[in-house]
Every structure is written in structure tokens, then in C-alpha cells.
Image 1 (spheres, rainbow, N blue to C red):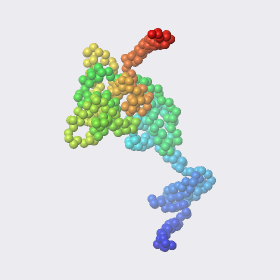
Image 2 (image 1 turned 45 degrees about the horizontal axis):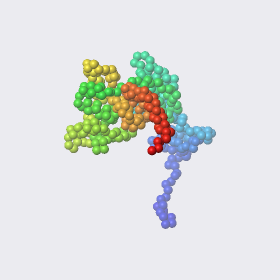
Image 3 (image 1 turned 180 degrees about the horizontal axis):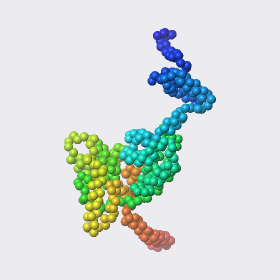
Image 4 (image 1 turned 180 degrees about the vertical axis):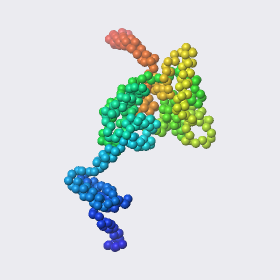
Amino acid sequence: MARRGDGIYQRPASTRKKDNAPRGVFRHESGLWAVRFTCGAGHIHEERVGTHKSEAIQRHHARRGRALAEVGWCPTPERTAARAAGITFRAYAANYEDWARGEHRSFRNTQSELRRLTAHFGDRPLSSITAGDVERFLRALREGEGAVTSATMNRYRDRISGLYKRAVRLGLVKTNPATGIRKAKEPGGRVVYLTSTEEEALGAELAPELRQLFTFSLHTGLRWSEQAGLRWVDVDLLAGVVTVGRSKNGLTRRVPLNSVASRLLVDLGAARTPNSDAGEVVFRGAAYRTVSRVFLGAVARAQAALRAAGKDASRLDGYTWHGNRHTFASRLVMAGVDLLTIQTLGGWRTPAMVQRYAHLAPDHLSRAVERLVAAPRAVELGRDLDAVAALERATPSPVV
């Protein structure tokens, strides 16, 4: 310790090297000899060389010489390219799967797609896969036995693109082979929704517990994952809303409850034991695979009941649990609710998605075009009234 003026300062530690190696060559904490140098781009680098000091000295001279001879040279891109050249698609897919485990909500879909991609590309170097390879893979999905739909093919195209976007970000590859590959055109398909008659027929075929789930789904438009994950702490009956902590698009939203949904929650809440945990889920024991299987059976029985009553049951063909969201949106449209409000209520990301889901019933469209029949008559009547009013204004009032 030394004193200078009124202050006390610590004598700086010696910067003298602790070994007799040239400056820039040093013993690494791992025990190996290493080098430290500044590249042509001005970055400071450290590299471990080996157990012999002479090899480290030679490496240091070589690095310093190249940095002086090549302005802007940097060894980082070279190391990245060498590492990428050695990594296979299989190894990178395994790494991507570990990363996606905490990032993707639909992780099971990610796993399934990675298994198929790994089976196809296998141990090929990650950087060797081209746009042509991706196009051939996608074409094979559409051909032969077990051909997939356009929507499924587009999901694989997006998965490949997502894989390589991350690889580019990590510096493992320079380009994304899926860039520029156009998605297949997906047919709009038939969006199935329920009429009141079909709703009654289907509800009658469900067990009481599943009927509660079914009714709540129709009146809130919640996705299955949102409804199955709903907890009592998310329910505010006084305000008449439930909070979806994380929807499909990753955002939190508040869903208003109508009288039917509120009454259902009140009945469920009354059956709870005192001092129950607020973190409990509202609809307990709801496993999608089980519910989906039971629900499809109920749809088949409802169709049989409708046919036995002499009614059309064809509209229930292909109806699944997700059709409850179609029903929710379609009924709102038929009630005259604007699309922006429907988008907010259902948690859809864009208005275009609302257009796809919220199809109007045929009779509602028929009533809309029927207005054209009355329109000319209304115009003619309006003209007649205008003429009478003009005549009255032109005729002088009698003098009394």
C-alpha cells in the first residue's frame, strides 16, 4: 500500500508475463498453450493450440502474418463454415428439437415433423441441402401411398424454413433452401357449423360432463387448449369475463361471458368443495384424444337420430370439436356482429382468418339478396312521395 497526496491507492498488479513465451503466446487455464492476436478486422481472438509451446509460437506468427497481409481478414467465418460443414441434418435436427421443447407450444407436431424430415435427409451435411432437395421432398409428400394434403405439405415447408432460419442466425449455414419455394394452394374447404336443431340432437347424445364442455365451447368460442387449460383463478364472474393467459398467437385476452356461459360456471363453482385451490382447472379430466373419440361417436348417434326423425343429417358430416368455433363465429355474423368484434372475441390474429371461419348460413344470405326485390319498389315509392311534395309546394294556398 502506498500513499500519494491525500488519497490511498492500490499499486497495480504487474503486467509482466509469468512465462518466458513471446507476447501473445500463453498457458491457458486448461493447461494447453494458446495464442492471442488481433485479426485484420480489429477483433481480438484467442485460440488453444496444444501441449507444445513451439506449435503455439508458430500459430501466433502465422495468424499475425495473415492479419497484416489481408486487410479485413477474420477467422470467425472460417471456423463457423468448418463447423457447419461437419454438422449433419440429423445432429442439427436433434439440437433444434431440444431448443423447440421450450419455445413451441405445439411441440408434439414439431417432433412428428422432425422425425419425418430426419428420416429423409438423414446424415447429409446440413449445408449441402438445396432448394431442389426441398422441392423433391415436398413433391414426394403429395405422391404415392399416404399422400398428404396441401395444408400438411405447407406445414413441412414452413418447418424446413424455420429450421434453416435458426441455422442462419447461428452462423451454421449461409442460405435458407426453403426461401423462394411457394406454398401449395389450400382449398377453402367446407366449414361446418350447427343449427339449433343439430345442437339439440348432438347435446342429447353427450354425457352431462361433456355436455358442459360442449355448451361452454359454443358460447365462448375458446379453442380446445384454451378451454382445457382454464383455471378458476382465470374466472371473474362479477365482471363476467374469463382470462386466457396465453392464446394460440401468444397473447393474453379477456373473453366476455354471456348468460349461458356464466350460469354454467356458477353451477360448476357451486359443486366445488370449500377452500378449493384457485389454481384448479375448471373442466377436470378433459383429455383431447378421449373427448375427441367420444364426441365423434356422439355425432354419429345424433345423425342417426335426425334421420330417424325424418330430418337432414348431412350437415353433421365431418363435424369435429373445432366446429364449435365455426358455430360460434357463424352465429355472431348472422346476428349482425361486425367482423372486427368477432376477431377480438375469438382471438383470431387477422381479419382474413375471421372471413374463413365466419361463414354465413345460406338462409341468412337468401334474406340479404331478397332485399333487392323490395329495393326498386321503395325507390319508386320515394319518387312518388317526392312528386306529391313538390306539387304541394307549387300549388298556392287558398285565400280564406
